Amino acid sequence: MNEQRVGSRADRLLPEELAVGSDDPQAQAEAILAESDARTERARYGPDDEHDERRTSEQAAD
Image (cartoon, rainbow, N blue to C red):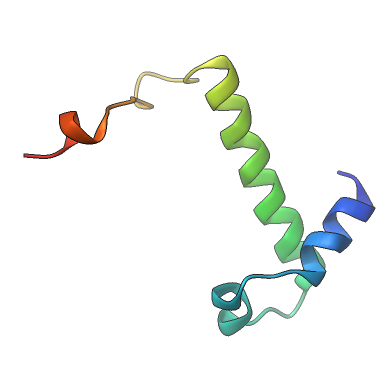
């Protein structure tokens, strides 16, 4: 992962991320970016398993 991207994200943790605290902001930022990248890939290429379903808010609401 790009160190500049991770460093930039570590410098801009959200208030809720800061409230939780971290012994290693760099590792925290790397984990956040990895999860974000995975979500982007799933959105771009579709679900990677049968449990990843997509519904509209109308479909999900009772």
